[in-house]
Image 1 (cartoon, helix red, strand yellow):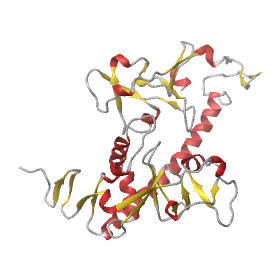
Image 2 (cartoon, one colour):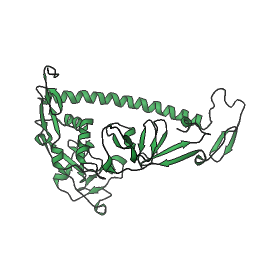
Image 3 (spheres, one colour):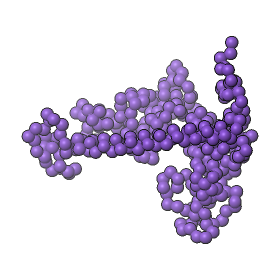
Image 4 (tube, helix red, strand yellow):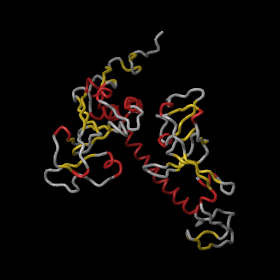
Length: 328
């Protein structure tokens, strides 16, 4: 007996509505790479014939704008185009920019009779699609997605552009709601930070503590007179991580293996990696404090995952004189 609901069909990507069609990206788009320009040939100011040079560094870090004056139309994009990183941080989807794009990008030229821009962007950004992109890009030091691997990615398409637009609109509404929630969370986070600043520096004392006590001047400013000023190295030990061979990596749990913790794992479980227990040189519990060595942002304070941690992380262990939660 089939478990496929009425009105649906089984495909290589799972169950989809029976009037949807499963295609590959090869059927609906074609891509071209951008332009590699040496640093010495990039301009610091714009003029009549220059265009903005779009790089990952500029988009991510707010790097000062650079311009170029020699280019072909094939490497130009405008606000209506879709770009995707093909190497390094592979799979980042970008739109709404105008200029000349770097060689690290694909420009995705899509058939507007088959797929709408917004539906396509949402599908490329889907966690399942992103994982497929990363798998195809490989696990080398610098992942690189080639044209044919990109074209082989499957995409289930609703039969009409109208339905695609409706789906994208619904997802856009969810994005708007999440944006409002993010703003509310950010506001509450600011309140928490202000409270932490007051309590952790002794500017404000909790009821029942420090009654009748004054303050004293130290090299870090005023602190309660009954507090002690110590160097963090006197009360905390630090231990850097270890990097096992990539050849030992697997991506599903297995007996005899332990999770390899990387900075990105504290944001998402989409890219879980496991290594043989015998390669786990540095380990941590979910309650221990971890510090991200690399960014952005650098020096992230992290916790909540148990496993073996890699070289991008440092474990901070307090002495008996310091409470672990207070240190965090």
